[in-house]
Image 1 (tube, rainbow, N blue to C red):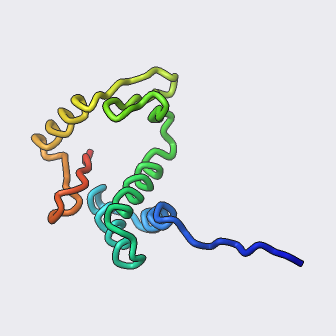
Image 2: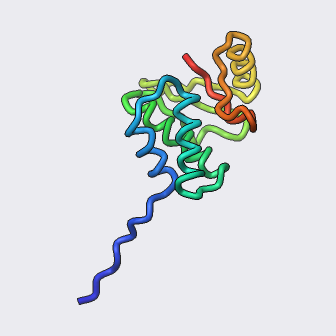
Length: 125
């Protein structure tokens, strides 16, 4: 009987999701810092790959019961299109997002995840 082996290798995204799911964090920056560190130190994943995996996993978990979504087809390198629960497009240009980040910094709501690299930046609310 020929049976194909089951691939049990987990992707960085899967590992990040497990780390985030298993723990409750005080804030977003802490959740991302520890998750990125776990991927890098315990699994040998590059920091860049770990960063993206942790960000994507966090966003998925953070948006589980949210009706709004980011429209990837309509979004580009310079615009993010958010579709509200009724399908209405909300437009955020790169300039809009940059201004929002600066406003969050001014209000003390923008947090740097890694103090050494100064990245990524998350908004606490």
